[in-house]
Image 1 (spheres, rainbow, N blue to C red):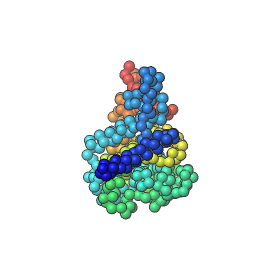
Image 2: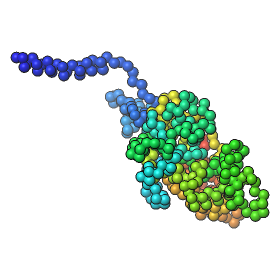
Image 3: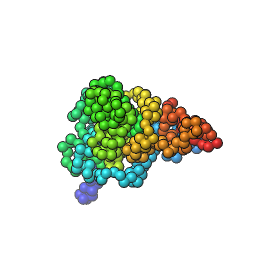
Image 4: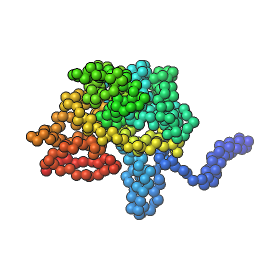
Length: 416
């Protein structure tokens, strides 16, 4: 008898926690508040579909179960597909390009100087590889806020020079963590980088560091301008080289880059070093590949993916004037110099889906004008300003099909 009572008492004790749990859950009428975009830590399930015969007609349910009238869900789904496509293109490019100078993931971890451009945020388990001239000042501001390196909540309230001061942001190259811990974080943290068209980035770097008058430019002119002029200035002009390093032409700058890339690529200044030397995308598996051409969308994607505060947003995009200047700068280069420039940055073009119009693509006519014999495979990502005026064959038709933005349009090229 006593044994039977003991068994019953044990059963009640075991059932009591579950009973309390269901009572509490049943009385909770609070509304679930989803983040505007899902995060990696807590992704909400797709909205439930009412069980009625006409729901799919009324709300246009897609194959993934996401309601098409929910822009946040559709936006997130679309950009997941974009990111997957970029990662696959990168992986394919790395697999088919052997000219990677003997690097490996193990070498990066053991020789940390290669990781100088990677900054870390342990709060959000994030690693960002910054690339100068690709919105890196604003991204460093964001990383300061995310990692708690500033009390400010508005990135634009941080002075532009502050994020670049050595020691402000924790770098993987200067970290004291053990190799095994560094290896673990590089494998498990969310890693992202931002790139832009390689030629546009070089034009931006040239103008910002060797043309304009600023304190930063003055320093670059003394450190690099004088050296470039002494090496590549020809003729009588050699006698008139400025001690300030002012007056470097774009052709001279490109000649310097080509020589430096060939002789000592790892010693190139970060403002014009290739992406493959700064971020090592073939050895570090990046979760997110952002592009300057889609900066606003990609930035929001990154912030929501890593679980950033809902009110923290990337600063408004200021339209770059560089795109409109690319053609005029490239026209100052000889055909041979253009080809060497492409060869020097070939991996940056290939791995991230950018095209470069090489001289062999042009045909010169009797009147001196030229046209493009074939459109680049990635022309959908080009802005209209990136197409020279005489690139379309007179016997061809070009029509606008769709526009990703006001500045960009997809072009079709077809012989008539």
